[in-house]
Image (cartoon, rainbow, N blue to C red):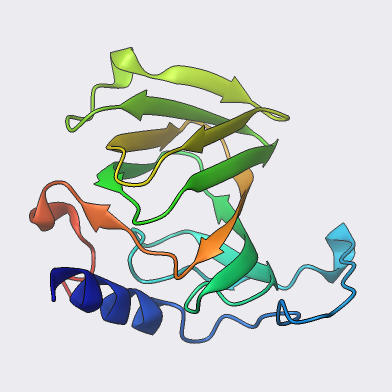
Length: 156
């Protein structure tokens, strides 16, 4: 029941994001100039932008999602229901592990870096500069904050 609620809320967060192609037998190519940015899912703090390059993060199956995060942006400690597979395209990410956001305990990951986390692994991120990252994984994508008060959807 709890997972179903999280996934339902996550699906609403993707309203307005246009997907380039479904993951069903489609040849897909996207150049940087073709990326169409829109508002990020509402499960993320305000200020981020998103572009779905492939698939549908709200459904089962493979997807590719880019996120553009402004300087000073942070995502509080959280988990995901599936593997988190991320490549830093530009900028840098400060990734920390655990249930408490401690900036001094993060690892700086510059452009070109990659990380993968198993499902339900608590982590948090800080961005000191504008950063673009790409999530490639299987949906449905979701995000559960360790502290429910950190969830931007709870404050709306």
